[in-house]
Image (cartoon, rainbow, N blue to C red):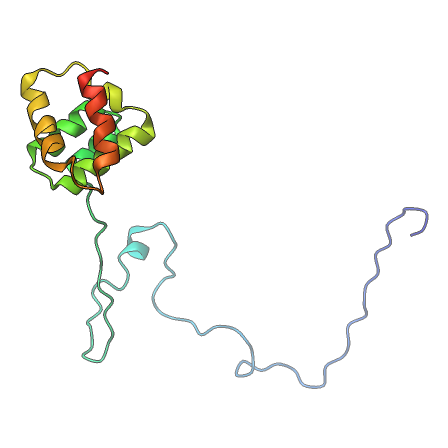
Length: 151
């Protein structure tokens, strides 16, 4: 032990006065159905045919909300198309301004606004004219107007 050798000791078994009988053993009761293993089809579909009682509590399933079309395009880094889709689907001003703000945070506002012709600039300019006086949006929209005008 102190020299680094391994010492293994065995404890002497104690004599029991009462021998275990089948009624006092701790074994699990045997069932007639074979044990289902995880990963099998039977394991996966267990309980599907179980009937629901009147007193059972049912948990409602909530679906994950789907992303809007412009959010999907933002995830794909297609900033120009995301802005076009936001205008084409007639989103409220707060949504378009939030999209513009997100483009500013991503550093992609200039890329999203560059190379647009008069057809694609018209909805943006309409938004700028209508909402630039709104104090909530004026700071951002003035910066967007400066980028559009190229000053």
